[in-house]
Image 1 (cartoon, rainbow over the protein chains, first blue to last red):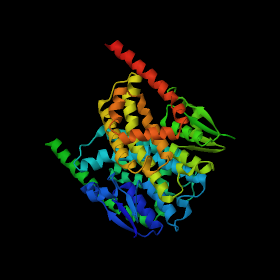
Image 2 (cartoon, rainbow over the protein chains, first blue to last red):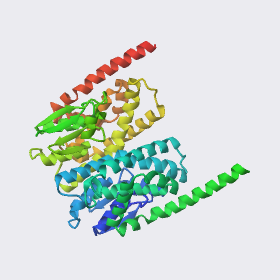
Image 3 (tube, one colour):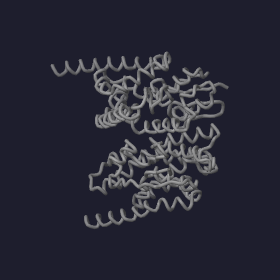
Image 4 (tube, each protein chain N blue to C red):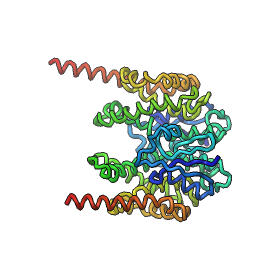
Length: 242
Length: 237
């Protein structure tokens, strides 16, 4: 029985697991769980992952969720995976654990807070929450500064590595979610962080062509959201003139 | 050079590291960084951990922070550590990683939110934030329900294990912070969760006598805080 990967390509950690599998030639079946259509709450999916979140994997009879746990499992379960993704050296490995842990309450929390409350929520009928979006942005900026000044200070990739690890895929996929913001906001938020911007490019190159292919759906959503926002702002301008 | 553990016994993840080291006979020097006195923001500590958080370890010229990463490092580095703390079986290990990852945005977030809104804000004389308090309580209750019905469904310890792992130490230390709440709020939040309560006792027993000893500061602070709040509410009346 082959590996099954339950994902939604609009979900940052889902993309990380997909890119990782493809770059390492891991044979798997991608099963889409459409979050916008609430498919993650279906009884069938709840039987796979009672937390009703993506991604999740099923490997034979073994079910696993939480993307970092999944990435580590795949590194160890599939012998073809190059060691730079999850080094055997205890010190290097520990540093990767450290940045993966830091991610939850910092970069992820900030990005999700901003993007959900300012874009995804309002575009899907949830009330917009300016306060929550503002707090999200504050945490995001603090996290980007820490990436720039600490996590990327010693090398092209996180924690001073010369080659990417699972941490780079996970965190870069998170930052890619900011592509859903307006072009102006995206530029304003990211442009001060030169190392971060370079690191995103380096990670894309190191996982080409899969990175762009897996992110295609995100860019299509970006186009839709930006067109909608442009239409709304024209409408609002007309209203204020009348 | 001995392992240095920078911590504050009032910090949940700090306590998990201390209990782990003592249970496994790991030789270390405990260096207290007093959070209530903002010692985590001194330039000296910032040089150790730029995130200005506890715990952090320094092992020779290797510095590491984030308690889950530290517990895994210690489990692998010291050969005397029994394998149940961090199983070598790939599937068992993956389940331990899974609950440790889940913890950040669920139990920890809920618990910290409840403590901030019900203990830290009143202690500092700051105005309450009822919306934040309500959200934190909701997150905590959801997390406790998931512990009761999923993470503890197959065994006395997390992810169906018959002996404790680093995940049990970490998550129980987190729940212990709720001792700072009033008795009434603590009981209202925890009493519906029988498996969770039993699991706390099982983890305490499995790590005796260190669990009680390390939590001594927390119990002392609880007593002082409850007395302080009783005085304040007495004055208000």
